[in-house]
Length: 500
Image (cartoon, rainbow, N blue to C red):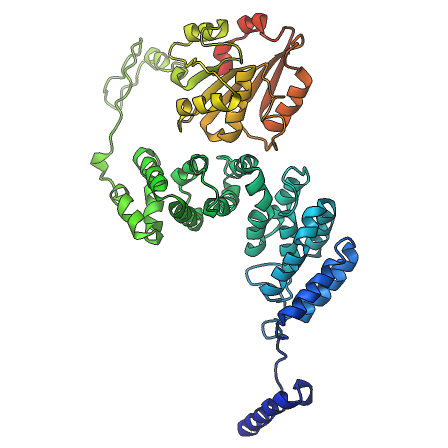
């Protein structure tokens, strides 16, 4: 039987060469048609003609994908491995050619691109959702409907290839054209309270880090440093990819950052996770951080001495177990916990455009909270932000108070570095000025308090309030009867409570 079948197969191969497969009756598996690039380009070009007719586009796309089905890989279930999506088993080259044909027309017609992207996504196949993600990446980054779709779709999908496309292809134009807004989005993904989205944030960052034309690595290092320090075991693979990509982009900056994290962290899991993944690092990087990854002996861990408290506390004597401690001693021990002392060195006041560190507000702050920072700033907005950056450095738990133009500075810094700010207090902030007014606002979760006067004739109240609502998730907005300088309100505010 086997010999007969082999003979028939040999015969069929000969027939296939001469007259074609349709004349062979041997039980063969139907293969995928060979990809003729010229024919493929014509098919993709013809498909692009229906770009403005979503229903027709979907019909011809289905026919084209079916034409290139690889039947040798198609299963009964026809579901992509590790996914819950149906798939045509179409070769990637076909999808790439379709993307090439629709790229320019999508960029020139974003409204139609969004409509077609919705149709493709709703179809629910692996290939159509990859095309939908590609179309999102052709949409202008300031299009207000882009991020809602990206957020909703990334929450719906489980397929790793579609998720990767949403976090890379769909953000292509935002990464290149509005990098500040892109980094704001990534900061929200990597917010300390949203660990379930950290993987998305890391994956979104990788293309920007790997882009040789992007040379501003410090802001990215600021963003990822807290994540590396937290070192969640569930993200070991993502952390490995992140650190290797950073190292390839800038070995010196990555080594410095890792040494800083490992030398200063209080989290014992940081070194544990690093020891698990370090073998995947380039050998030169392994050698640089090897000593910092050695387990510390318990005797080497410093124990901070207990703070000496001088009060009327009566120490409990060592007594036999049968002897009760007098009630009055117990009562005197149960004192209300003291409020932790505020670290004034992490409070900074940013003065207004034509003001200085010798203004009335600055002097009152310095007198009321000794050690608080009240630096001078001069020049344009960009120049003042450059002066502010080395003052704040990479330190965390800052409380930033900004007045008018200083409020614009404080709000902008907080949007760009939310993990460094514990609280933001703005006094009549000039948020209607650039670059704040036109930026794509992705809300941050830093507790924010704004005080604004109804008689302010310099900074309009309502436009600022609307911008603030978009920018800050936890916002308290105090409207007072006062002018732009808030002279009356400033003296009436309980600053100890506001800063606590």
